[in-house]
Length: 407
Image (cartoon, rainbow, N blue to C red; front, side, top):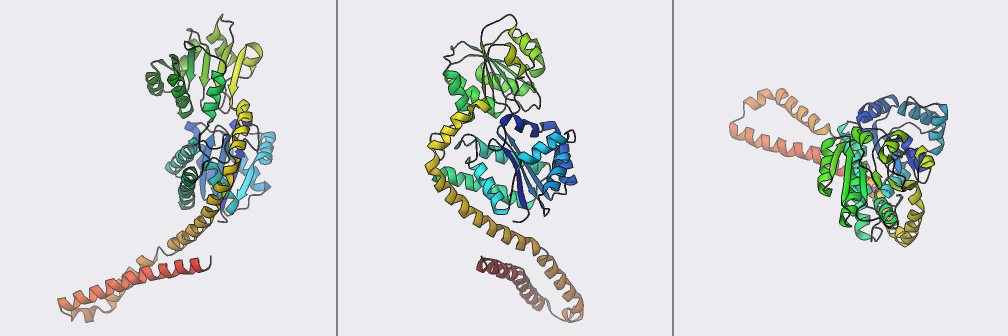
């Protein structure tokens, strides 16, 4: 366990706006994370980025001290200046060993989420792992840890009421929208067609809203969402030329800079002076903050949903003890699993060595074997095969028993 460490930035440790500094765009993931892994000397790297957190799970024997963190963040973003690196070092929550595993279990079980009890995080953890695995960033330790993490989260959701009457960031945003008494014929511009916007679209469709225009970098994805809404699809690059007007913008992209610039917003509103609604669930925000100074906008964003999220946590407080019992039990189980796996890896050469010994014996006793008839050879082969299997299985069994006795 000494090598498992987590460097985390969450809504509990820093402003949500700042978390966007740590987001990596999809087309840069491979190059940046591979460079970070190799330069920082990491054995394994797992990167998780959501609307309210960025987590680095790393496997390394290096101590996570100030020098390590400075080099880590200098490598993570080569364009950061000294002030930005200092910010990252001061706002990072570092955990190791049992604490790191406990944190990971809490994250996937939604106990550390902005909205406690929402299940979306378990899918985000799984998808992030699959991406990092595809990129060759992870290995045996992260694989086992994430597998156990998913099991723990499912256990928590199944055997506690933490997710009863689930509330999500999207549902909170939608409640705020409904409180504005928006008319059914309101014109929606939806920017981005990922999981968050697709979920929001389902709420809107369910409640009979009917005018939708979808923009996305990939037209096929925009068309898929637009078809579900009986709306129209465009490439994101065409947003600046859209002149059909709108009442509400719903936006959530993975962009590292504002998608809706003052120039684009001015073009979208034209001569329309009415108050608009913008639901911005992106981190960093897709809406340029300057727009709020010049236009009448009712902004619903991640950071102004935090107060509602606190109420959600208080309502679920009594379930936390039951969740913690499950988590602590699984921490011990994982430590046992990791020890057993270490033995398996250490002894993976045993079968190969046993076969080499058998082949050598055949050479040493070649003369004696040549004097045996086929029936005797067959019996000898059966005896040797039996012994070979036992030589492979017995040391493993004995090692596992020793581990269990020392727990």
